[in-house]
Image 1 (cartoon, rainbow, N blue to C red):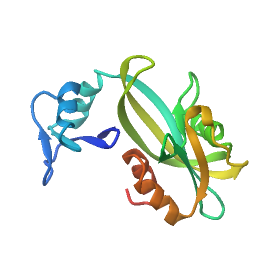
Image 2 (spheres, helix red, strand yellow):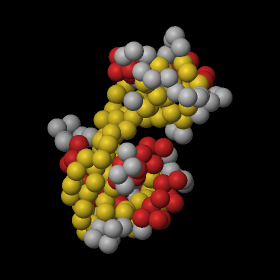
Image 3 (cartoon, one colour):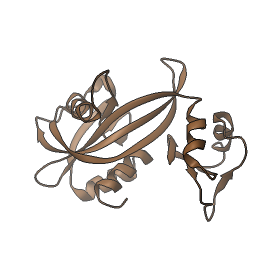
Image 4 (cartoon, rainbow, N blue to C red):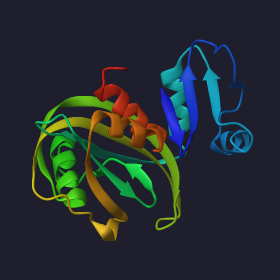
Length: 194
């Protein structure tokens, strides 16, 4: 289990890593934030990683979201640039909405492209301070592969989306390298690398 804090990663595992920062004892949010001042990755090695993650997650407000990668008939993937970084469309799941419906809705809203869910790719977790609510949130995003691509790519500027483009596999890899680690993980799953 990995929780991302922007570009930094907190890993919960039962196996000690070959190298890196291992967290012992207290696994509070404050301790992790202090470790991230000088490290990009921290690993919590415990017998029960799921229980350690659950205890850590209790200090956050949980948020459920969904998004995805639309791939067209040419094998090109839809990517967008949001707030100066390459990203994939995603958003909060509305009450009563399934993750699959949310993914298709958010893609249409943020990119102007309509598509249908084919299959799940992965789930990612990321933690962040949300100024509007003045709280720490822990977001689980359900990611999907979608097909279709009807509509003209149109950025939802009010959500910080600056550009929406269809990308060749090579360009997708190039843009993913400049994206947050969660996006890199989704693209790796899309390519069968995870």
